[in-house]
Length: 192
Image 1 (cartoon, rainbow, N blue to C red):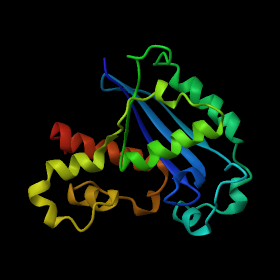
Image 2 (image 1 turned 135 degrees about the horizontal axis):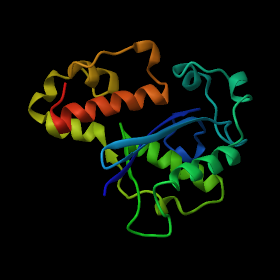
Image 3 (image 1 turned 90 degrees about the vertical axis):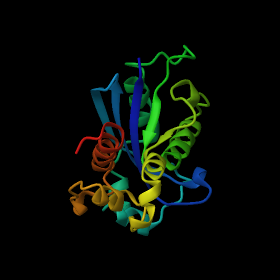
């Protein structure tokens, strides 16, 4: 049985030191043996020490004032654990999700940091390491065609693969995961 969690985050900054980045949106899609089970979409306030850059917020169409209306991190963290616990027993070392995303390590590291900021060092009880990176999958699959890609940003890859893009929806974590799923279908299953 393969359990997967497609995850995308929207962050308050993009730092080399990911532990300083805040998260303002967490979207996840739980998939068991190829069947979509359910999803979660949380808007979360950053922690007080997180770096907030207005340029990063603007990418996702939010402003600092919006962050105040989002849920506190401990509340979102508890809700997230309830979702994850529906399909995985965190006490069973062989029962974990494959963490899947586009440029997955970016999200993986920041979500791990979110767990740690919530005093939880057991992120690895939920997810296998390493995460499965759809961007690397595309790079491997299309190595001979690489020179034809304008970039490896998700939008450009999706366009190259013939996926219709609604640019106004980009950088909404839910929409980005929908694109990621479409890219996986084309690359892994040959569907268009």
